Length: 146
Image (cartoon, rainbow, N blue to C red; front, side):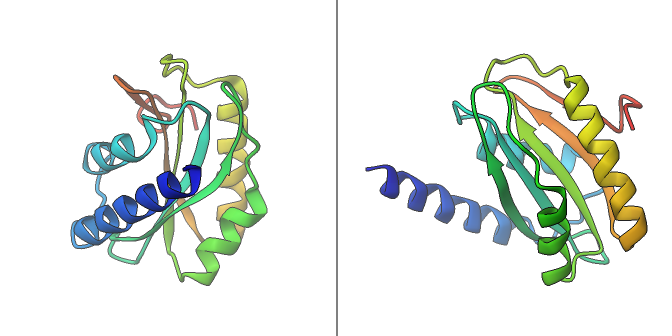
């Protein structure tokens, strides 16, 4: 049963990525609806990266980790491994807050800064980190949190 659900979610995500690939990601508003469809229903935290090409079009959305009701470990190294393997120029980070509270935690802000700093060294820009709930979202960049 869980396998069928994972397969369904993967297929929905693949269709969503294919539909969105032509449109550049120019602001959170261009990507939030897709992220909300993908992340808001989970009852544990999921951390994803949205990989973008040189024209800011979506290459892929990759689930990097899933955790508990209120936290997940973010594999910084693996985020960039995926980006490098898929020739991404930039990325958007996103994760859900199943609690419904979209406020980023101190850990959310800290990991974002670590990933941004690593991206500067490698040459992959981190454009934003978006926290998603069923009813709200918060862009860490738009709120000046990195």
